[in-house]
Length: 114
Length: 113
Image (cartoon, rainbow over all chains, first blue to last red; front, side, top):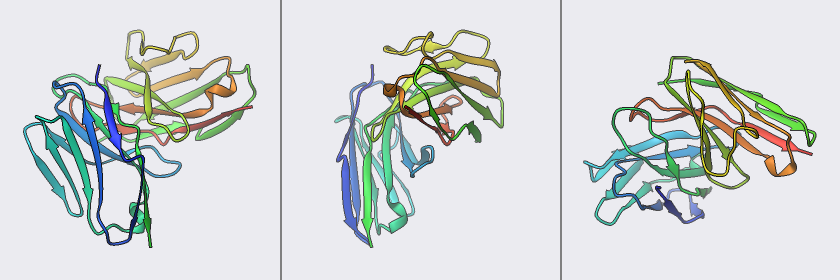
């Protein structure tokens, strides 16, 4: 089955700096890679996702890059703000007809210091 | 999109008892997923619930311990049976239609004493 490794487990940055979280996956058939943000007491919420036919995707301060050859993908948050503090999870799955389960990384606790 | 209402949001239970967690989706969905998230850990899939058939359990999880119901396309329940302190976790339900994003309930924080 799929295995997703995520690093680092904790990350502290100064407000305004950038944060980068990296994930690797094992199953070359995986072709959908979402990132979730989980705030305390809440369920995970999608912040950005990328499919295997795209190398990079950006949404305002958030970007995700994908290297299919190396089987790794990364989340980049620029100009970090205190409200970015949360736990971030990467995930991988198949894509296409039907509903496929997601395999999650272990999470990164991001702290943005004002 | 899908909005999932999950309840209870938290509970403290005595060991040996059972707790049933409910999830209501605001639209009809084919599959629902139940996850366990132990403190400071990632999400581990417990089982996949398809309406009209038995749930499919992942390795390490059994139906006697985590019975699941899926009576219709908008509702599912997970029961944590004969609880022990090791069952203290956050339990999350989720749904995903095809290759769209997955949506999650807000989670149930369970403490077993």
